[in-house]
Each structure stands twice: as structure tokens, then as C-alpha cells.
Length: 215
Length: 258
Image 1 (cartoon, rainbow over the protein chains, first blue to last red):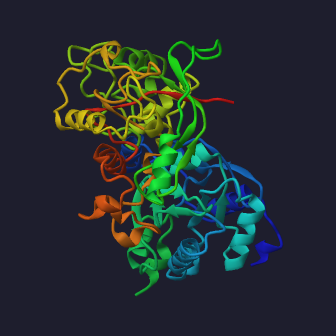
Image 2: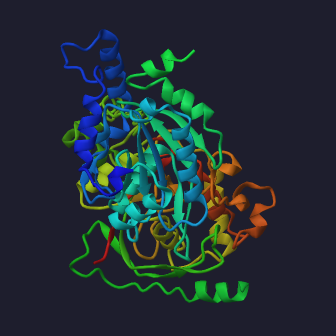
């Protein structure tokens, strides 16, 4: 909650997050063979982090999605003035968060990409987040070029269309990507029980000791 | 309502004039206008601003030149998230076209991502669905032939025919009154916003679902039930994902007019 009044630069927060998670970064030499194989597979398959668009977050800070590398990310598309679906999508993301322990939560980033870059300024996305009291040190509201929004949406398999009245019809899709940007799970629909996504998330946490400790 | 729509479509005038100097020789200007699309909140006419459209679909030879410049788009290098296993699979090798892919035939088995990368490299973009559909209303004599059953029948007959194993040269494709060739009659084409129909997954997945597209009675609620050909195009597009490659799906470039 402190972060609302103390807008820590996004990357600094990310770096701190990484420091708090020993074992998540390897140099090429240290990398175990299993990871090298996985890396080769990721290279052939491609990853969300191959998209090199530059985005602006709710703090006005520029970043590429690849800056989020190294941690699981929950991604969704929507727009701040959305009256129906997006508040519920945010609620669904928060339900996933609530199902995690505090130390698990700290290892996950949440990204809300605006499909309405004309209206969703960083300020507006920040206000949107404040409305729901989300932890803005881990939640990013991204605004980008409309072509880049389309590209990311297509890569996620999400669909949307601007309606005549200025609203958007859009997929209600929460995508879980792993530390390398590979899509590992999709939660489709609104008001979906978070269990399956939480399970998938626990499978890819960089530091899952907390769950192991539980009976 | 229906009558108003018809009048508006009828008044979607297509002006044709000699190409001014600022139009590249390989493109034609499509004057803007309004048209009534098939689905969605589509009882209202939509306005299409003037734009430039390639006269011909992109060919194997042109795409090969691009692949040589951009090796990341070689068949063996392209990543699966951006081009599936069928990508350029009719080519003989990474940089060899072979018998099934004549140099001057439209390139097919290209993903939306690959098409976009190609066009970005030549300062163009994919046409938007509205632009493509608006341009494709034309036949050789009329800017809007879509009310002519013979025109629609011809398109449907083409859809019913299997795609030939080897496609013809783009220079042999029929031209419309603007000199744009092969919008109908050879291959289907990618549009920028192919993902604008909410039909993925379960009904609960999407905020708005165009049930009209796929329910049996859907065609009745479509704006123009007679235009089954357009119906098929919307249905086809909504079945695509960005990395899909299809043996009769190619693309051409467009450009906005500043």
C-alpha cells in the first residue's frame, strides 16, 4: 500500500524482486543442462518476450515486456473505462492473488494491457488500479502503440473490436507466462474459480519453497 | 432500416481516375466510402477512408527476397508462436522455391506475423477488414457489384473449387475497375484485424459473442443474407490465429493516405 504514495521506479522494484529470489538467475556457465534444453525449445517455439514493442506503464516509465523476464507473469487485455468485463477481470486476477501465500505473491507480476491506448493514459491506468487497491509495485498497466497492442493480443490468442459507441468487445482471457515468456496456461471467461491458474502458477514459481513447507 | 442501408451502399461511390504521381505503380487508390458489413453491430454503415492497396498479392519471388534479407523469417528459423509448422512448406527449401511455388504465383502458407513483417519492411501494412471488404465489392465495371447475384455466384463458385496444387501467376488474375487483381478468384488474404470477431472458445469467454456467425439461424440476422460469400470470409477469418498458415491464404499490402 505504501507504493501508492511512493512511486518506486518500476525496474528498481523488479530488480529488488530478483535480488530477493536467489537462484532465479543463472549465467550461461552455471545453467543446468535441463535449462539449456528448455532454452533451446523456447527459442524454436518463440516467446512473448520476442515481441520488442516499447510500452509505458502507469508510472509513465517505458519498458519492454522482456523486462519482466525471470518471473511468472499474469497477462490480460482490457481498458480502463470498461464498465462490465474489466472490473471482473481485475477481480479475477485479485482472486488468483488471494489464493497465493504472501511470499508466492511477491514472485508474480501482473500486467494489464490497454486495448484503448487513445484514452488510457498512464494516469488513467494508475487511477484504474487505485480504484481496486491493487499492489502497484507488481501490477503494470501498459499503454502502447495500437499496432503493438494488436500484435500482443494476436500472440496471446485474444480478440477484440472497437464498437461504434467507443466501447470494446474483447476476450476475457488471463494468460500465464513463465519466466521465459512461454504461455503455460490460459484462464478463459469471467468469474472463473482461480484454482487451475493457481496450480499452474505454483508449478512455475522460481522459489516455491513456501508451498512445499505446507502440509 | 434495411432500405436506408441499401441506399447508403448504393451511394458508396467509387471514383476512378488516372494514378497521380504520388501513388506507387504497384498500388491503386481506393476512394473512401461507406459500406454495410455483414455482422456484429453491423446494421450501421461503416466509413472507409481513402487508402492505397497493392494491385497484386505478394508473390513467392517477392517473399523469397524478403526472407533473404530477414533470415529470421526463413522456414527453418521462424518461431512457432509466430508461424506454425506449415509455414512456407510448399517451398523446396529455406531459400529455394521449387516446382510447387512459381516465382510469380501468390505466396501462401504465410502467417499473419510473417505477412506483417514483410509489409513493415516495405513501408506498408495489411489492409484492415473494412478496407479489404470495401475494395472487394468491386468487379471489372462497378465499384459495388455486391447486389448482383451473378457476381456473388461467381465468388461462391470459386470458394467451392479446391485450390489448385500450383497457383497461377498474379499477372493472370482478373482485375477490377481500379486495376486491382485477384481480390477474388485465387487466394484468400490476411487482414490486419482478423481477430475482431468474438467467437473464440466457450460463450462465457467473450464479452460480446456474435452468435449470429455460427448458429444455424445466424445467416438470417446477418445484414445481407444474400451475401453468403462475405459470410464465409468472416467465418474463415474468425477461425484463424496469428501463427496459422493455410494453403490458400496469402496477403497484399496497403497504405494509409496521409
